[in-house]
Image (cartoon, rainbow, N blue to C red; front, side):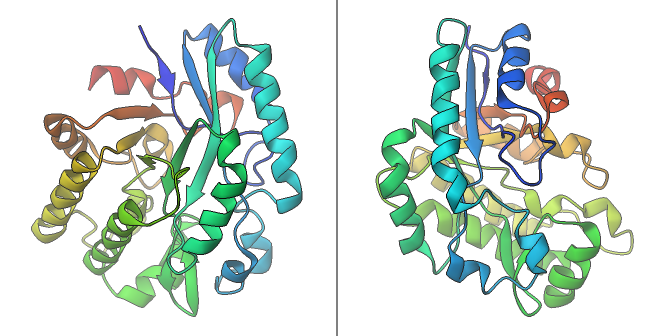
Length: 276
């Protein structure tokens, strides 16, 4: 029986723990995983970094550097070869959808796509105060950079899911990942905002239903990302269970993703994934 973690990171990740991917793979083997996808954050286009409103030192934590990318692929493929008799390792990237910078992403995937056999397509940035802003950096940053720009959560959600849908149809070339990552990441800090209505209203819920139909029609998978269960202000998977249940009814393939950034994260939440 296949047991797959489709979303993990490595010691190359600047916002990770620094734990080595080899130790993470060995833990996955002991937990009975048959498949393990290494999906590191690739470097962002320099031109995109210039329009992010966050501090330079914070931007630097988002992804690996350009001078690390070759070393990352070399290391990941070395792990794939070393453990090939114990676990199927898939090597890829967690590619950011960056509206207006699709040509840069196509160039990245054209150069490195031949080294990828898996990947995740995610959205980590939205337009906000003074430019593009992190969605998931911190609750305080979300408040001053995102909520202050949109004024309420429904407006945030509408824009966020519109961008997710745009990513689905974006022309990123033949190596474009076919699995959408943590599609409700905009809810990461929902419990921080006690005075706000952060739930999904009927209009946004319909927007998500329409998105799921497009996901199914275009043959994409969904990352059922358990990391949100362990985030202080989230308390649910990305996406939430009701969305997962609708996706299942539509026959969308759901891939468990620990989003592991440390040894402790490997396999975390798999019991929730199995039970629901």
